Structure formats: C-alpha cells, structure tokens
Length: 221
Figure 1 (cartoon, helix red, strand yellow):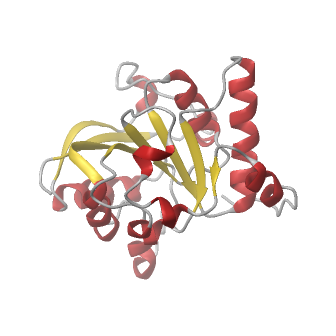
Figure 2 (tube, one colour):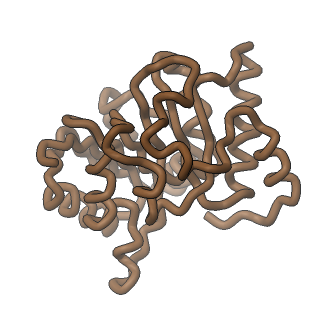
Figure 3 (cartoon, rainbow, N blue to C red):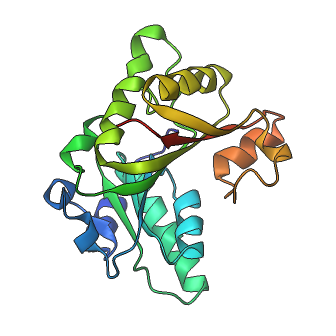
C-alpha cells in the first residue's frame, strides 16, 4: 500500500507514549515494556492500524506489538489507536507501535521474547520470482520468526492473492508449521476465527475478490 508523506507523522510518533523508536534496545526485553506481563501477539506490517487498534482494544488480556516500516503509515495507525481507545474510554497500555524493517526482525526479537502469535494481513505478494524472498511468509522469513515464536505458537495469515496464498501454505509446511485451519473464502467461514475486518479486506470483498486465510501452528523449531 502506498501512502503520501505526512510531515506530522514523525513528530507525533516520537511524542506518543505507545510508540517505540528504538526497538533494537528492546530485544529480549519486550515483556518488561508493558504495564502487565501477558501473552505477546505481533502484527507484521500493520499499515494504517485498522486491525491492530480493534484487536488490541478487544483483548485487553493480550499485549500487542505492531511493526511497519513507513512513518506515514504508523502515524495514521497511531491516530487510529488513539481514537479507538478514546471512544472506549481506555488508556493504551497493551499495545506498542514501532518502526522497523521486518526482513531484519531478528535485530529486535530473540528467543527470550516468546511471542505467542503472529498476524500477517494482506502483505505485499511480490509476484515476480526474483522478489519472492521478500514475502513476509517466505521460508527465509518464517525461519526467523521461529527463533522468537514460542513452542506451539501460531501464525494467522490472510490475503487476497491466490498465488501468494498457495505458496505460503507450502512455505509454512516446509518450515515446520502445521496448517490447523484453511479457507479460500473467509467471508463464508463465519466461525473460522474471531475476524477483524480490515480496510483491505472490505475493499477486496466489495470487488468480489475472495479472501484466503489460514492458521498455522509451529510444531518443529
């Protein structure tokens, strides 16, 4: 997703109590960052924050970390989180946003961080063969996630792209994950999971594009 430069984003992020500008210094210490010690869930590529703002508000017993690389995206996400929590009259204590290149994720997480679940929603499909290693679900990336994903940890993945979905299922199996649930039409699977409808998902559904989704469980470190 492309987004225009927003000059206000960086100053607002730096002033936000739930934004972390130095995630490398939190490596191995994420449990200490939060007000309460709770299971940690991670969203990779949070975009404008439509998903993370809703799911974090709904599940106060979970601590959330949302990562993206673009200041403008994170700025919009920060405002979305503020609005969502303010409407519920709650303080943001179980969610942090941070800016980082997900390809270098092991610079900010290690085996002591013990993430329980990873969410990957509508990531870049990188359809060209030479670019596929950039996919957030590629085997190269999955092996990195396994370092800090706890035993029996899960990946929740959804996409509109058929090729990315088919390849991702193969990547997951090759990397020691078991596919626990699978659907090629999430809209029809009302009990598939407690789904949070994202901006992308709504847009694609309105265009008649079926949303593909899976839940994968780590069975082999």
